[in-house]
Length: 525
Image 1 (tube, rainbow, N blue to C red):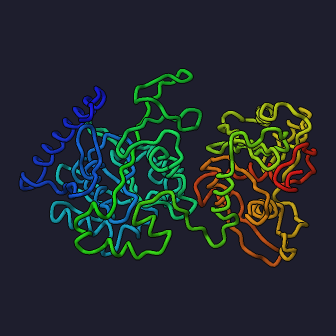
Image 2: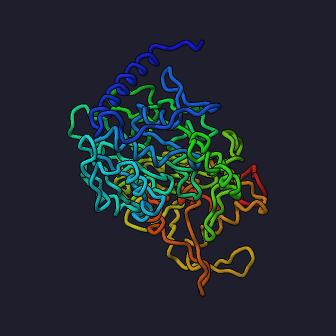
Image 3: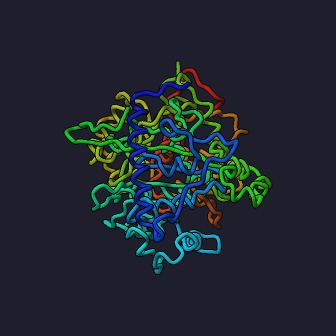
């Protein structure tokens, strides 16, 4: 028999109190004093279930009763994801909102609005994407937010449950912004964020795997079990895992960590879909969609956009080549810097030892509020080596200021002006480039191409990977054009600073110093 620890006993006691209170509330609030509007599905015979405290229950019930502040539920298709959001809204919370990226996604004969009408019946009033007067005085809103402009429309509007259906379709910054307004005026009312989704199918959704890394990233150094709680706090703009949920002081500020968990679910956990043969529909999906939706596999490759500059598979291969000691005996060849432009942008420094790129040096924008302090960060990152070329993005006042200050420090700073005309052609000799920005992105594409033989090694940084896979291109009469950085930022919800810094440290606008022990062919010498 498994030994139950004191923490598990306390967790279970708190859970039992919540369950009992919820059941009593459901009984008092239903119209016939006997049946709540919704109940989670029971554990199906032969299914493994999810352990919550000392109990094993169905995935949907485990998610329903989880104590996590932020929960991700799903993975596979047909596991009851959308029903969970509706059920929580109608039985556990007073003022809820469920988001999709577009309002139209809530509709349709099998959409969430129609399903909510099946659950509610005549026990509420619906109009303008809003349920009012649900049993217990509850309200449920159907919202939509795809961009920061959309998210800001919900500024200051209180909800004690924020739900996200198909989370990988949302930009990370939109998610983080919306959950920042989670609150309630009712004493004793719990607040939480619950998201659902299948594995991401495009590079824009890869942030979800990083955010829930202990559960979804197979290479995470400290993996977590389904339903297990982990605590995180944002320190200096970064998520930092904490040992527990106890408050702590950081630079005089009291910070309370928030808990996360992931509960997986498959169609086998849903008896209704199994009886109608939905599992066989999923079995006939083409790969990799079958592995993603049928098995809920977050490790299979995403589907690239047909105009994606750098294929995801090539970036992943470069990350898998990387080792901690890959730079041994190889001098620092070059560095690249993408200065922050305030807000949530990062100040990123990338360093290259021939074909090995070091872990990125990432600072929040507040660490480099001006060119002088930005230049000091660059100087420190390269150890004050004035022989190393440092290629700096100078677009905007922030970049030009950092460049000027680096020159004043005696560093070998090189201007990287993306709008300048390009005279280069691609390796086929047939395609030119509209500007330097297109040339630089295409250069990295050609270097990462497996047939190039360069064997570039990139650090295992999920956000860097997403950044490098974000850019799109299209042909023009003047040559290849890559979308502007601001357009990428608008589409993915954040600035691709890490990927841009890697590009600046890889491309060679000026001949770097000769490396005594070159690696990986002729590149980087």
